[in-house]
Length: 117
Image (cartoon, rainbow, N blue to C red):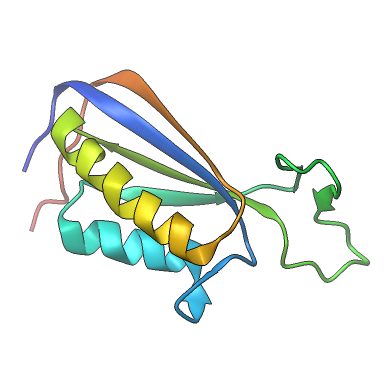
């Protein structure tokens, strides 16, 4: 399947230690998006950040064994599929009761082609 033209970029900001039904939330989100048929998702680990509470700065310091680092999940697909993803992710975030931020922006998809067999 090839995708070109206008699309949407969904970004979901969570923490590494957030959980959903006993597994890491980031993993649960990516697996659910894959099952739903979205083009792809990427999880990016931050080295420092803080959330809405601003109480704690999470950092990847050498002497600190932290699993509370900020994570960013990025998903690009058509508007229709991203809107479906938002509904799915909202439900998961509500159930996990974690702090989070979601943003959505318009993008132009230049190239999206799967690997050739």
